[in-house]
Amino acid sequence: MGTDVTHAIRVVSLESRQASAMVSLLKRHGCEPISAPSMREIPLEDQKEAFAFGEKLLAGEVDVMVLLTGVGTRLLVEALSTRWPQADVVAALGRTTLCCRGPKPVAALKLLGLRPTLVAPEPNTWQELLDAISADLSHLKWSGLRLWVQEYGRPTPQLIEALEARGANVGTVSIYAWAMPLDTAPLAAGIRTLAERNADAVLFTSGKQVDHLMQLARELGCADALLSALREHVLCVSIGPVTTEALREHGFPIDLEPPHPKMGQMVMSVAQDARRLLAAKRGTTTTT
Image 1 (tube, rainbow, N blue to C red):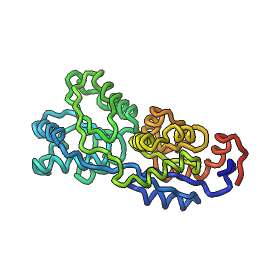
Image 2: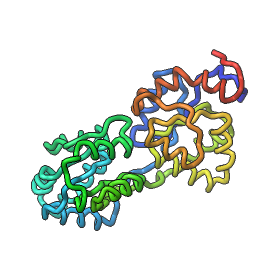
Image 3: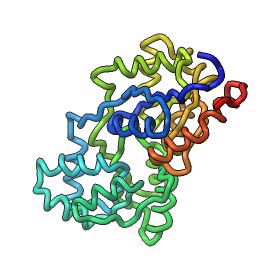
Image 4: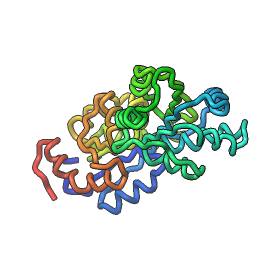
């Protein structure tokens, strides 16, 4: 591939759950998509954490519940409903102060007939959530506050530590985990395409995608080539600050982040800005 971008922007998408929707968005905006699903969502086989939390919840021993994801919220209720009547689980949650990191857990609660006490504003990182909790729950006595966090694909130690520093007794419950895809061939092909500098951009929509990308790249023996390509030739596009944190942990550059953490905004930003950013990154002139 030459250095000037005269062809359609070639974009590697690591999206799994909404892979087809991402491909459609990219095509609609004139990009050439390369779909490389990087994750498989699986319920945890051992639900001891969920049931331990459920015992506390049904006994009225949970003051505040922090919900980080919509899928995790739904699966948590489903898991608890295998041991207790769902009506009892929902009623117990309704008696609890519910704090949501963003709109997806809000939607999951709505399906149960519940509304959150507070919702963190965009960009929906743990920091906005912590600030919202500190401000909106300032009337609560933090010392000894029984607070539980429903975790998602990646743990949030900063949030846990900050809540504990305020005096809360923090428990965590993980109800699902992210695994590598059963078929890693598309992801391996995407990694090779990136490492060989045959793509113009790669889209990251979650932090766990970053972990899996590097895990498989190391297994393929091309981690160094991949990092080099991402730093010198391929645009790293992050959907938002939560994912950006994970990219920085691996030493990836952040070339583009949309104004709002939405897939549509992300693809639109790529379509509008990729050629200019690629020219600057590769030290070439913009070609249309």
